Image (cartoon, rainbow, N blue to C red; front, side, top):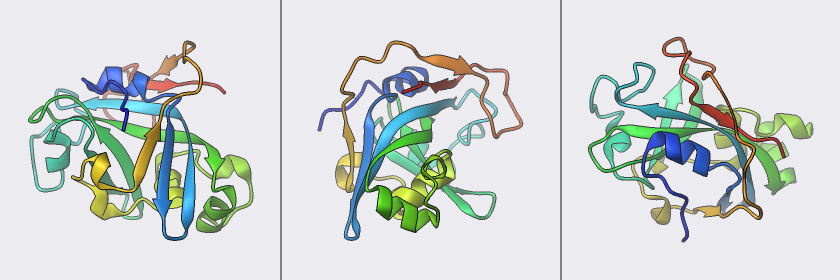
Length: 179
């Protein structure tokens, strides 16, 4: 499987934009184009890896291409692609997708027929694509998730401070595109 450059979190956050994230499940296939990401690194106080490796954060310290799926706010699962070399503690949060396939399946999983509400945030993505928590720590090649390269070159990448966090919000590590 061809992969984007995930040599570090900032590079990976930009390079994942435009790629189609697809999950094949027994129920069917669902996916969308990655249109928003956020970068995190162990030197960043907003990162789960900031305080070092723990049982929960161990996947972030694996090599690029591994997945870090974590539970947050006692109710949501979120998907990250680990970046960099093993031992580095960094990753990219997938923040939003533009749905492209399995729309009806995503609508059923999300209990909504409103297209714009299918995958507008990290928790909605894992729910719409049915990304299981046990994917954490697995390399993407060991899962039924697939990344398909962009159909066109992505050039107009916008950036802003990260959202949904309380620390290090000034870092311009949120990246997004308009399609």
